[in-house]
Image (cartoon, rainbow, N blue to C red; front, side, top):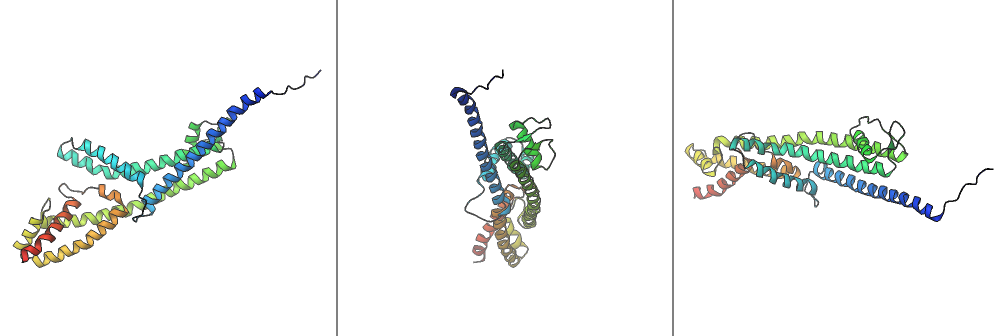
Length: 277
């Protein structure tokens, strides 16, 4: 005689339904957190790189991290001799920019990994469903457009993989396009600072700037030269508001400093009318 299949009692159904519901809740929560993380990273990236104007919402994450890292970096640099200190401080700007880009990349990879986990993840080559660690590896491969040996199991997972690959290409291309504009603005700033050295000394001072002009009989020429700094100051304001990271880029030579240069020029503008009276 064939044995009739036994019906599951209420206790057995509850035991099975509990883990299933908990697993679904975890996946839903992971999907929500992943979507929020992806949106936050893309929003920060858009405001910092693609929207070079003063907006009501500054890139808070990038600004906060730069301020925190700068305080730690400066605290450590102050305990070094002068030459190593200046070298270390000069490295902060480029390394800080690379760190922020790496942070955005890691955030996007982690966010898409959570989304992949939420939609059912993927399977390994042996047909076994992967863990969240596999999801993270799978997401990194999708972002970098590299083969990870893992395959998506659903249409949603495939769409997410394509979206992540597109985001990876977008971040890469925009970052590459951002660097030339950044270094051009830095070069224009440093050109004016270097031209000030023969006139105002190193480090620059208003007294040296005015005194050398008077000794050479070039006061009128100095007035024209100071007028040119008005345009330089306007460009400085525009570029440093659009690309705040330039403010952390130090001058190429010891003793040069764009802030000290513009201070010397402003002091000279305030003193020259008094000398001519």
